[in-house]
Amino acid sequence: MGGHSNWPEWIYVAVVIALMTWVGAEAWEAERLVEHVPEDAEVIKVTGQQWFWTFEHEDGTKEIGELHVEVGKAYKFEVMSKDVNHSFNIHDYVVLMDAIPGRVNTVWFAPDAPGVHDIQCREYCGLIHYNMRGTLYVEDHS
Ligand SMILES: [Cu+2]
Image (cartoon, rainbow, N blue to C red):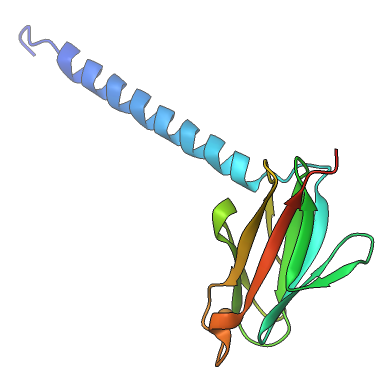
């Protein structure tokens, strides 16, 4: 190689590898945070059907069109459909999950402040889709 130095290339390669490792680790951490459901999360069964949402709490309590939860607790939604494809959306909490007949899709959230939020269907599901809405009440029981 007649005295030609490879150092610049090796530094370049090392920097690229370090960057790729860092980006990969960040993505993995973000994925882990999103996918990891807290163990104490309360399961809420969410059923979509034309054209309303039904919510069933762990104790068997059912709500239609309204969902009451407590601030500071974690909830795991098991989202399903009785008829056609719907999509369960709590816009303010970036909750969005397809409701598909014959499937159970899960998504979780932990409301951090008392408040009232819109629940909406985000998948066109027929004539009254636009009115397939609900209301989320986050309450402070402490
Ligand atoms: Cu819909």
